[in-house]
Image (tube, rainbow, N blue to C red):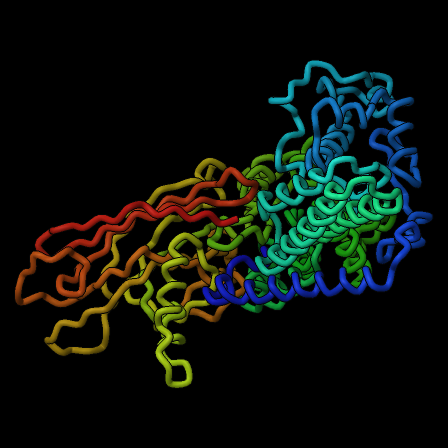
Amino acid sequence: MVGPLYKNLDTAMEDNEEDLNNNIEDIDDDVEEEEEEEQNWDDWTADGEEGEEDDLQLLCLFCENRFKSSDSLFNHCFSSHSFDFKTIKTAFKLDFYGCFKLINYVRSQVANNQCWSCGSTCESRQALQDHLHEPSGFENSNLPWDNDMYLKPYMEEDNLLYSFDEDEEVDDDDDTVRNVDGFEKMSIDDETDLESYASNLNLLKSCKENEVKGGTSVSATNGESSDDKRSNNSFVKAANRDIMIVNKDYFGSYSSFGIHKEMISDKVRTDAYRQAIVDNPSLIKGAVVLDVGCGTGILSLFAAQGGASMVNAVEASGKMATVASQIAKDNGLLWNEATNGSTKQENGVVKVINSMVEDLIESGRIKPKSVDVLVSEWMGYCLLYESMLSSVLVARDHWLKPGGAILPDTATMFVAGFGKGATSIPFWENVYGFNMSSIGNELVKDAAHIPIVDVVDGNNLVTNTALLQAFDLATMKPDEVDFTASVQLEQKSSNSTGAESTTTKCYGVVLWFETSFTSRFCKEAPTVLSTSPYTPPTHWAQTLLTLNEPISLTSKMLTTKSSAMVGSEVNPAVKIGARISVARGVEHRSIDISLEVTAIGLDGQKQKWPVQLFNMR
């Protein structure tokens, strides 16, 4: 359900550094070439900018009027809707991201016929326009749009988000610096991978550094010419435009086809859903199905193939909703009101709805308690990262009939300890015959603060597997997503029957999950989707939490007692107690994980380590 996060210790810690340096060098080279080739900055035009202005269509925040420039749009908003963007921006000292959030907030309020200023709900869009008034009652410390949820565009391909300040002169060089710093602090709350984020960040930093250099040269020169001023102002505009371009790419990644290709290509995932839907006719045939977060619509197509009478495919991304509709149409499965209203039953049963679940409930387009089967592929890394589980549970409670089915209907998280083989240490121990293990040790040490998503071979697990948490998706409540669980891990039994004590080192714990389509609903063909290290790999891989220091573990009785620290090589532990908490993070769709481990000796001695905190974002 999600794109790449942190994969492979070396990739997360090392490869990005080289990519970042290359990006900076490339940008510096480009700047030098432009300086040599272009002497007259008055004629400067950004790449791809020429010819785009004529085609630019900016939709009014409050009505259906469209404009070719942000200035004309905001003038219209002021004269017709009592919304003075420039005054609001100045009064509340909004930076680029503050304005970005404001626009998305206003669009979300208007879509619900609510006044952006006082919050009043009107009966219609026309009533809302008649009601609109100048803002009142706002305080800088309590602005309703000051929430990271409004960093995600409310409207697909909203050109206003990337052009609202293009006509403004930049009077203070620090404006761009603050914008860049703001980007650096912004959370990664989408499906963009670490490499892409880091690359974009360094592009902004390079713009920032060049801009500051330009600003210094101007301030250090007395009586600079008007050409010099125009040159530096143009360069500041160029930096701002680069920021807007990067943001457009960043937010546009929500509709990435690559992510959907990765998910559909995941045979374990897709086959499990297909079997659950297509091979259980007593459940699907003639049923009304709801697909939450349909993406390309593959699960909806399976439901139609299985004989569903109606499939409501809900997708929040406007781009993907359009794609899903086209795919359903190309396969003769798109719902058509005229044909479905006729006496002859048609194959077109897939109805694609572009909306978030919460908004769809308010619209009333689907009757409450009218769905027989709810299906969704909502799982994220470590099951809960960037997952849609909260929305799925909301949809379940509102639309699912009493006794209706939810697919999958259970989810279970597991944990086990991993050894050195799951780290990068073995690679660095022999590099063309040279010992570079100090690098591997340093990488493992750094990983003690970062959850790593990577595929782990079951042979590299050194303990038994323990059940961490189980969810019954048919009955669970939304707040049960947050949990704390305690497990005990023992050294994994081997085929060896020797009496000698064997000791291994546990470098951390690995988390994975299974979702099941049980016989409760899938009576003909129940199935399990597993992301275990012992089964074929999936795009979810596993999640590794690395300990601050490895714990020595044994499964044999020690002949002599030791006063050394439990868990050390001379006094290995017989058990590892782990207390793990998983909770939804402050940043949208992120999760916070805490790990507390205790080494338990043969005589009951214990050695505790400080709690480690991991944030998946």
